[in-house]
Length: 179
Image (cartoon, rainbow, N blue to C red; front, side, top):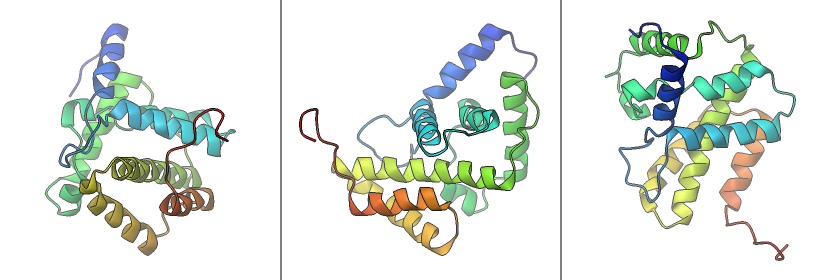
């Protein structure tokens, strides 16, 4: 799909990928792009797993870069079966190979679960951010994620505790001097 890319083309492509808008099918109050999503995931990785393997960082950095070409396909469209997930996976793999030039990220099942959990947790926390700003459009996404989490074992314990605490209290943090 993509031929050999020069370093400057690879850098430019990742910058373009980072500004691709996520959740574009839901009206939201602020920009929510791939770069912000990845930065939030990286912060949680560092906080929750300070000894995470290098492959975990690489996975986070590259996992949504293909959206520069294919867009952010909403999960409900995938669930409805209107997206060929096998072909999508091949295209995503080929784009990441061209951009990042590494083959397979060696992550065991535990790390795969942690990273998929961080991906979903970050989306959930963004929905809570939007709701805190008065955007009730995200209540549907929030409830859908909560139902999914309750029905499936998707989060490791440390992520699940953040999920549960965020449900109880997601108020803005105090300013300096207010602690």
